[in-house]
Image (cartoon, rainbow, N blue to C red):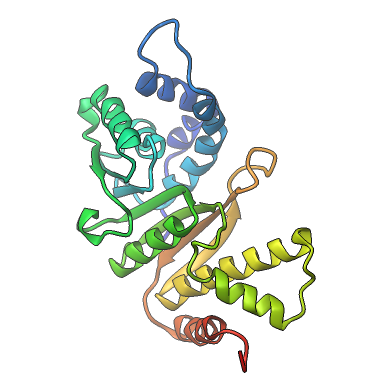
Length: 255
């Protein structure tokens, strides 16, 4: 069941509060400013935090493919979540996340350096898994690792569709089979939509109820849709999704 946070919690998730929190973590000198990419994140964070807030009260949060960990750090600060584990494979970004977390040791944010596809780097008992702009196959690795652990909630935002995504080749075969036009402006969104369909059906087949919602306007980022998945367990919906998923990943008939 979706959690209803108190109004005062939602009230402190505005952009001004998010920016202030980012400055506390990442700006070390009075005359310094947030990096451009961090300033851009303010609106995105103010959009995704209310989605997270409506999952659980003080869960074990895994911020996966986290970069410098703004989601996990801001969730700890503004939502008051006391159990946050950050996973990031890039050594430089992981080190930056550790330095930021060290500026607020009372929050107890743990940073783990490793690939989200590596099961060993994941903590036991994750209750909410978030991935903001998990690039290419990282999105799939996050939802696979989370679903294998029966994580009750997944909130994930993909970006950067590429050939590195496992299903991309099958999606292109479907496009060829259906005679989709070769012009990139027509073909690319069709292929991306099939990739997102496969991801959604995969989650539903694993026992999740899935909604896909815009968390910011497309003027903020073209990758503005969040997959919010709540584990409800096996049932008719999962069986039907599994059958549809199997047909989709098998590829076009006769190919």
